Image (cartoon, rainbow, N blue to C red; front, side, top):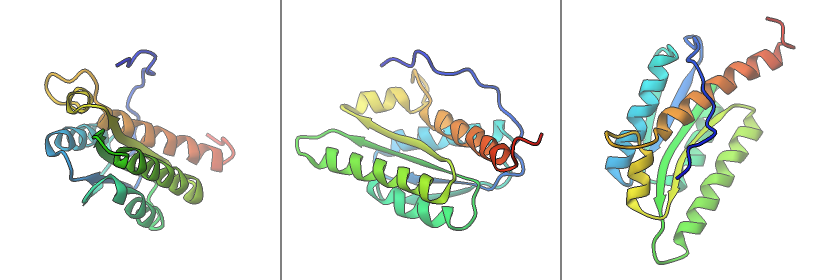
Length: 162
């Protein structure tokens, strides 16, 4: 696991952004860490009253993210985990979720924080979940990236008038 090269960012004031988090339910210990990381990032960036929605699994993330994007949210964060098994199911779910989330971002022109862990083992997922002893906090990172991108999109839409 690398983690090397990650940008250093400082939280910015995002109190005026409407933000939603959509989190899958599979692998509850990992998901608890990802959601907690997202909530820390939202608090650090001063997001007021974010919406948190749970879905059954990673495959369901894109459709709910799309529904929220259509409701004029400034950013939506997708959190989930898929752990490789002995069948091609892993590949199908990972591709479908990734392609669907990308489509939502481009179709709605909003940032979709990509907090979908695609891991070979449960330990890899735990290492990235932001739990005590984890080496990475992907819930925080995906949320911060979505918030910073939402701020950038606002500046772009205003023609950089700031």
